[in-house]
Length: 165
Image 1 (cartoon, one colour):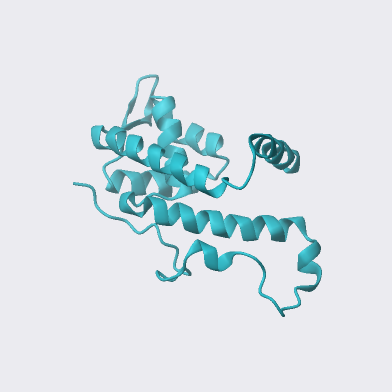
Image 2: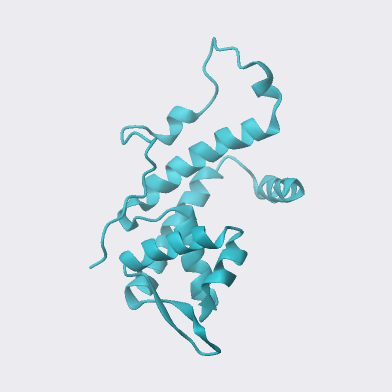
């Protein structure tokens, strides 16, 4: 049985809901914040992240844990350093993610076949089973958060966001 790890950041109150982070509060002057693209993206990210945690709490999954599981599943035998690079995070961050996934019994380290000094990563049987349910829940989450956008608008949003990175 997997050990339950918290997926709730320390600054998040359990009673808070994603919809509480919606539109700006009437009567509050946000000044320059209203003009900043980064601020608008961050407010949207907060709402999306809250919904993500609500949808996936039963698995103790965070976005980095889901990303790691997906990448490991699609790239058997991947080394930790390559996982960090693929995720765009520091190696130390990847170690934390993999350690958490190991505690949940979703991922294990095995001897790398081509480098005896390194470990390769693979999903466990419970990890494969969990990933199926997690992926289905994430697809529902993604459909929910993007439900107000048309297919063309979604494509345009992805295109525009790619220009920022």
